[in-house]
Length: 373
Image 1: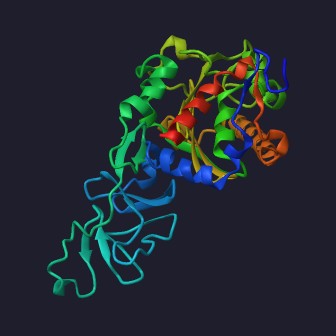
Image 2: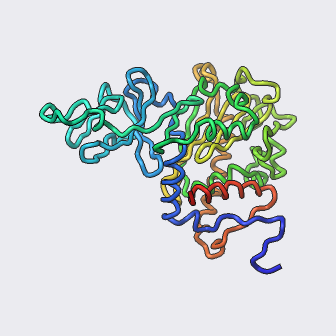
Image 3: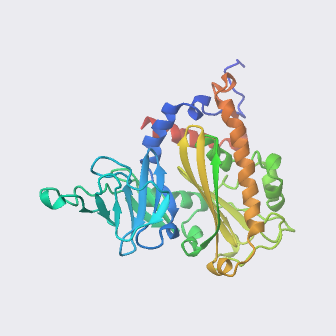
């Protein structure tokens, strides 16, 4: 065997430059995050007309709001006059219009230009044509998804298709009634690592026995190194003495109604490329959204979702939140430990994948195809 050959049990990873090169990151922004469906926010974050939030999608700042009919709307957050950032705040609320602070051009909640100094003297200016640039919007699972592509990919084939591919049918996800759940806790993590390291970490469990003692106690099969996503329909079963998906294995809160027996006492994980992780357990749902900001920086926003009455009653959620918060911090610490190594000459040709990680090669193939396409 030569130095360049690998034994049959190992596959090579992406080279280190894929995790450090600003040019590759720029191509990912253009060809992945600006072309696919991107989960921007929870619909309740813009719960009333005029409520807004700005979100970074690829290289663009996107303004999300609701119009007077309560319909989600998204626009490039740029004034059509001279290109000023329209809303500098991360979130807020307006009554009727978004008004640029530079020259006072104002747009209604559907993006139409409705006012500007001396606009009446410019009757040839089409107020729709010179309105805000719209972004495609879709609401599903209680989240607002956007696509910056001129023609978005099929939502059913890509976003919903990822759930069907993982669980076998879309009904298995829809039984959790995620759109009717309430955010009981949200934590925002600023991770000093490339977004692909985070995805690769989530998709494999070879590391679980090493860095996730609390998770392995609740889900003992993870100690074997095989992830919850390694075959269609698989859900990791709770340990025999575990009552709930909590940091100590104690009982959780009220179980989500409508689940079938196969979903009881099990954890399911779904990766929805390019930036969503969906975690399903009987009494709550955990959804991660990644916002890649640089080749070595990714913000991750994580929602813990429960039945509305559980949150309204002020039930103690700390033990269920703590379990996955620990998992997140353990994972993100590991990713941050890997990031410097991506720039090392030792990783110039990449690392290797053991058999329980071989499925990550499919993610690498997908990435190369997107970048080449």
